[in-house]
Length: 97
Image (cartoon, rainbow, N blue to C red; front, side):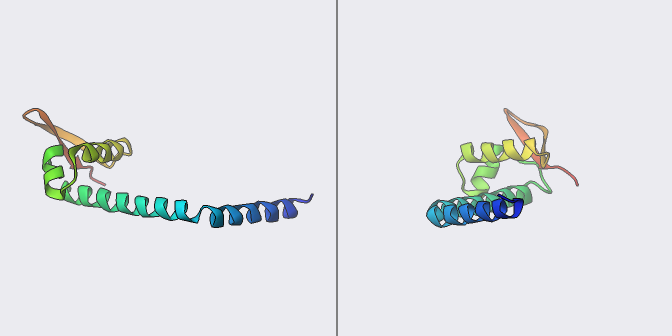
């Protein structure tokens, strides 16, 4: 089988999988879109002023455990940084670009 035929076969298999799993793909895309919106809201909220996880959760009406997961990911990818403490809570701020 030539490389061109193999590429066509792979493309056909992927096309069939997309059709077969369309509902799963759609659900995943919707979830990723919602997560992106929440991340952008968090970043916008902490751009000018540092905030704690409970402050962010209250402002965005999101459970604190979800905010923690988002901030952990944003911190991992160097989007936010810790900016001191407020009592027992860490303050988070948007990392300057």
